[in-house]
Amino acid sequence: MEVSLDSNIKTARLAGILYIILVLVAVYGMGYVPSKIIMRQDAAATAQNMLSHEFLYRTGILCHLISTTLIAIMVLMLYRLFNPVNRHLSRLMVTPVLVQVPIVLIVECFHIAALMILKSEIPSSMDLTQKQEFSYFMLRMHGYGIGASQLFWGLWLLPFGMLVNRSGFIPKFFGILLIINGIGYVAEACAYILLQRPDYLMVRQFARLTFVGLPLTMLWFLIKGVRTNSTRMV
Image 1 (cartoon, helix red, strand yellow):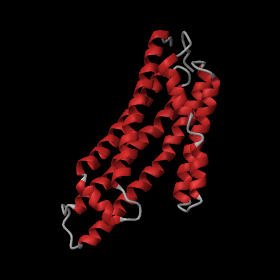
Image 2 (cartoon, helix red, strand yellow; image 1 turned 45 degrees about the vertical axis):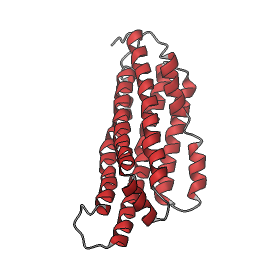
Image 3 (cartoon, one colour; image 1 turned 180 degrees about the horizontal axis):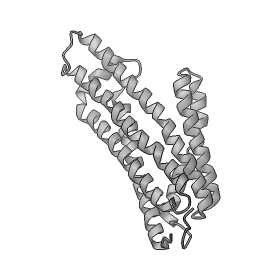
Image 4 (cartoon, one colour; image 1 turned 90 degrees about the vertical axis):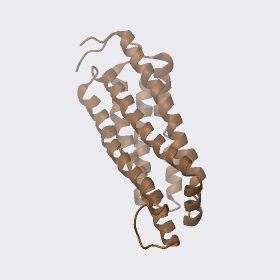
């Protein structure tokens, strides 16, 4: 099956644009908002922040849902680009991302439930302190869910890296960086689940040194596009 160069360039650059947008949305929703709301090991202060800045808290939920949707759209666009290279690897690339979508929807329910508890929208006999502690527990459950979901984020990067190596669209070292990036995400997810101790921070810092593969690849797609005239279906 022949795919035109112009079509591939447009697809690659649009995927790059989506990546930039989803990063900005994710940084706000999963970085900025939690930093203003969650007070580590302080359920009362966290509860006060949630009630005092409810709209900010809700924007964080919305941004996480939007970024997850953008990720799914971006990977489907990459599927269109790389399916002619190898259809089986392309399907393996898409599957972990699609699995991650319902997981994110479920864990965001913990965020919503935490707010509902504090606002007494869920009937219970708990006093204020118990509500604050249970709400904080729901936030911790959300954190565990997001940490575990990184496993799937890492798994889709492995076939993506293999596809990049085979495609000839961009330099092969980007494929190597993507595979290393995927291994880093998988390692961090496993460490998050298994360790949960101070020594996890060392693993986390080491794993995050590997996270340059995807940003560099998507920036290349955005700026350079692809460099082949056609691809052959495998």
